[in-house]
Image (tube, rainbow, N blue to C red; front, side):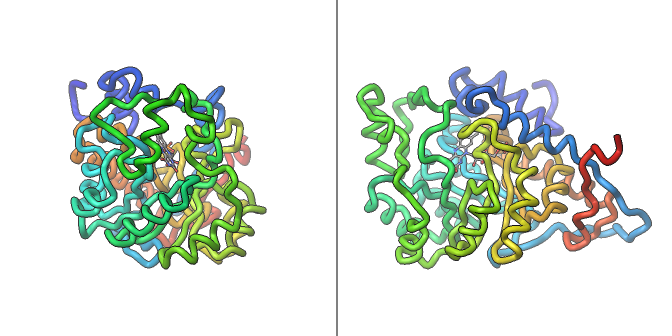
Length: 358
Ligand code: FNR
C-alpha cells in the first residue's frame, strides 16, 4: 500500500494482498452463500441518522463502562482465532494495542498465544476470556482457572457453534510452528483431521444446554456473557439463568447462514432483556456511524473481529492500535455531527430505517 490506511476498508485491502491466500480465505470467509456475512454490513447502510443541531459539542466524551470497568470508548475487540497467522506477535500485539487504546480485548479459546503470556504482556489492560465449552470438562475448568488467575475480568461463552459452520469445514492446516496452545487435547485432533469425527473437529460439546450456566456459576465467580443469542426467547432465558451480559452476534457470518444481521436483531434483544443485563453487539462494524447506530439501538458497546485481524496483518500492535484509533475518531465525529456530547445524549429516535424516507 502506497500510503497509510485511512479507513477500515483500506486495512482490508492491504490484508487481501499481503496475507497468504489460505490465511486470507480463513479470516475473510463467511459460511455457505455469505448472505448473513454480507447482510451484517449492509444492514447498517439501510439505517438513516437523524441529527440534532445547535447543541454544545465542543467537548465530546466517549467513555463508558462494561460490567463496571471503564473503557475510553465503546469499541472493543471480539475473540478471533489464530491471530498469529496475521502477525508473529498475534494476540499479544492485540492485547497491547487494546490496552494502549483504552479498550477491552476478548482472548479466544482458539488463540495461538497462551492465556498467561497475553495477560502478562498487558497486565493493566482490560481483558475478557472467551470460552468454548468443550466436551472435556477438565479442559474447561482448567482454562477458567487460568483466566481467573491471570486477571481476566469476565467469561464470554459462545453458544452459536455446537457444530462448525461451513466456512471452516476444511480444517485449517496450521503451520507447524503454531498450535491451539491453550487446548492441548484439541491439537491432537487437528493433527489428524482426516480420522477425527465431526464432534471431535468441532471441539464444542453439542450436548450443552442451559444447565451449562449453572455449571459455570459453580465453577467461577467471574461474570458470564453469552455470545451468539439471536432471539427474544433465548434472551429471556439468558436473563432467567442470571447471565451478566449478552453479545448479539452471528459469529461474523461464519456459522448459520441466512440468520438476520446482528444490528437488525438488536432491538428485539434489548426489549426482551429489559435492562436486566448488559447487551453488546458485533458483526459488520466498519465505520464510526455503525458504532453510533448500534448504541442508538441500545447496545452498551460494540465489538470488532476482522478489522483487528486486518490491522494485525498491516503492522502488528501498531496496526491494531491504528484500527481502533480510526474507528474511535470516526465515532467521535459521528457524535459531534449528531449533536451528542456524551453517550447518554445518543437516543433511539436518532436512527430510523431508510424506508421512512422513500
Ligand atoms: C471469529 N469469531 C469467533 N467467535 C468466537 O466466539 N470464537 C472464536 O474463536 C472466533 N474466531 C473467529 C475467527 C475469525 C477468523 C473470524 C473472522 C471471526 C467471530 C468474532 O468473534 C466476531 O463475532 C465477528 O468477527 C464479528 O464480525 P466482524 O467484526 O468480523 O464483521
